[in-house]
Image (cartoon, rainbow, N blue to C red; front, side, top):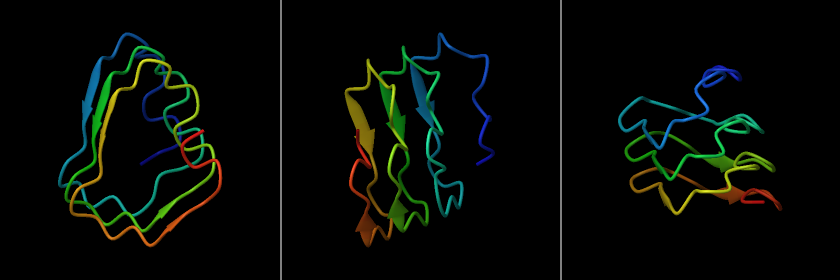
Length: 79
């Protein structure tokens, strides 16, 4: 995913990224999505959760990583 892929869509409530062959998420990937309530990242190839990847997601209450290959989560990965 491009670092600023979600810039300018602040009112977004849900994000379905299932089956997109995503290998990694950038730190601050979702930083401006304060109204985002859920993210579906199922069935991708995510291996590492980097620090500050999910920072600023004040409304997030559902995050689905099912069927990924996560082997490491950096401290502050879910800050």
